[in-house]
Image: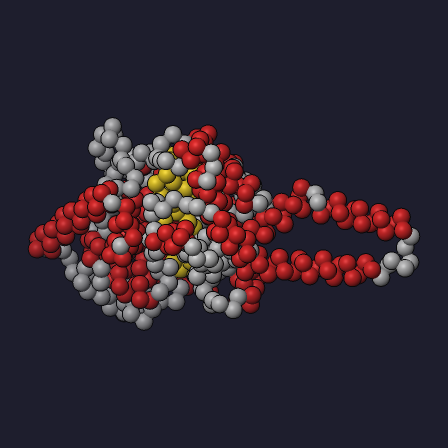
Length: 481
């Protein structure tokens, strides 16, 4: 792929595809050589990482890892589109129609059947589309258009991984009975042999309670090397669980012996302005409520006053109030600072993450108020996913500086920011909130496999996750719909 498309107004999608240079013998030979060299580079990096964990801290390794992760993200979405998984084709059509496309984009403006063909020219066109609709920063899109690793569309070889994923979902969840990314987790078991264990975290519970549930999931269900994937508050829960196990009894510490890596989805581990301001508003409401009740002191009997105070005390000390207030506190910036200050974490495990930025075309109608409120509450960022800012969603502490935070920063393999919203992993769970406008822009139909598959495959590519040696070589299988 070395050409650009003509303006879509002058050409149909079929005609536009023909503007890509078809691969001749020399191009095929060059591609084969590039694939061979990249495969050798992957093996060399895996050997270097196996020899010394310090390789994780090297800037060149960070850059190469990020390129591979972003390339595998594009490959994951591309294969979903070719195989018509879920509603990904509807999503891409909506992105090309409603998203603001950069001035340097000369690709197709609408989809066609030819776009899904497994031909180098068609895949090159599709990669160009995905770079435009997936990545937020214009600089990232242009960089990857010139990146041979991205353009080669290198799949990770088929086969099963010797690995278990512990899944910790967000502040509102049904825990072990949850359905978040259920179809993706099913495909993960079929294609990679990776079982996902859902931690039985609960809605509006404190970070310590949910961390204990993550630890229980590891203790009761994990028998292989493992890692965790956290979503929103689930990232804080999983980080806290790590600290509890590493700083706990010898039995707890042994649970971390087989820990390999972690994945953060729209992390709230650094807190959110929503919670910080909500905590402040709640305090002000209690103060104003007390002032309001004082008016009645002169006109109410002592018995009535004592009754009202007892009822208020019972309400504030109830289990429900404790859980709700504890959950809000754990999501504040101060709560995050306390968690990072006291915690120790595994510094040999690479961390990948997905951060999102919303735009007009990707903002669900049900989250418009949250998005606007968040912008008004923040004076430190203009880019957010409706619930956390892009600066806070990183996979390392930003509110405190100590040895633990510095080491976590060194293993944070930051990838390109994506054009999406905080509820990107959800679909069936938010159907009752989906509006006609959301249907039109396919807001909740974004590819779900990209949240998990690239994380596992990049760790397998660099030897962090082992393959099952007993598995026979497999032919690529089509992902189930």
